[in-house]
Image: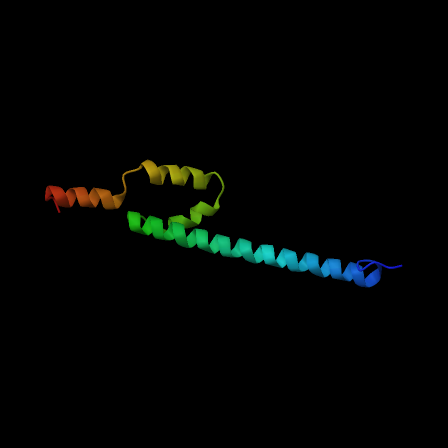
Length: 89
């Protein structure tokens, strides 16, 4: 008696499912990377820095340091707003 996964056809089906699952996860990873870049690019641009700094968010440890810097630094847009409020610009 042969099971549905037994024999040559069963091994090929399992291999095909494995490849399909791998491709699915690679697609999800690629979408996640692109989405991460777009989100951080927009955040850096709105803060007054170059949007290209968003690419640094893909580098481990650097992304943590940059997130801390963004959270606690005075943004260029804030400095410009304060200067406008004081009438210096």
